[in-house]
Length: 153
Image (cartoon, rainbow, N blue to C red; front, side, top):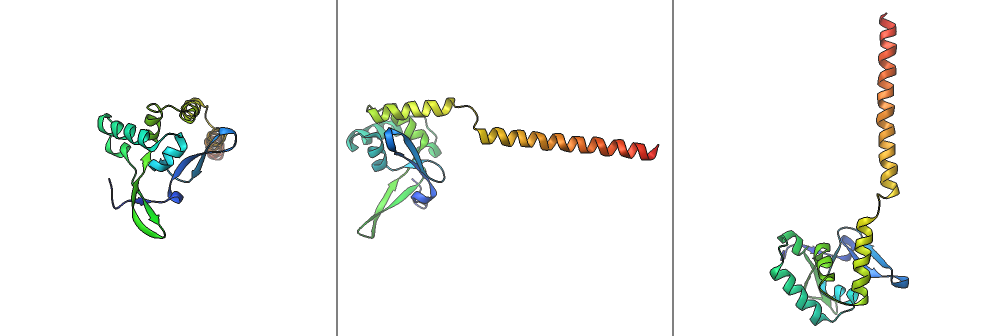
């Protein structure tokens, strides 16, 4: 673990359950969650989550940067008591296939749906805008070249 790297909820994103069992992403930045957040989110016991997590970290072919994303400071009564490791999205997804609960099932469905979703509208608009800009630039050059040739003739 990278002891010198600390994150807070403001610097990362994490998942929570919203209304009607909808998954919401909170925060800004890369998705990373602590064990206690994962226990609450997946609605499993800490013992079950910890066992599966340790097994996953021990036998999985994940690269070091896929295993953890730093640590979060843990305060008790306003005093720093330690650090909790943050697990990235790759670990969260892998864990969802090792655990069994309604929440885990809904999370797997959510991830599969997100992966199959078409390109968001704002990206399409950006690509169209970029195409028009390039098209416009080429049109401008063509018009300029034509007028230059007209002047030279």
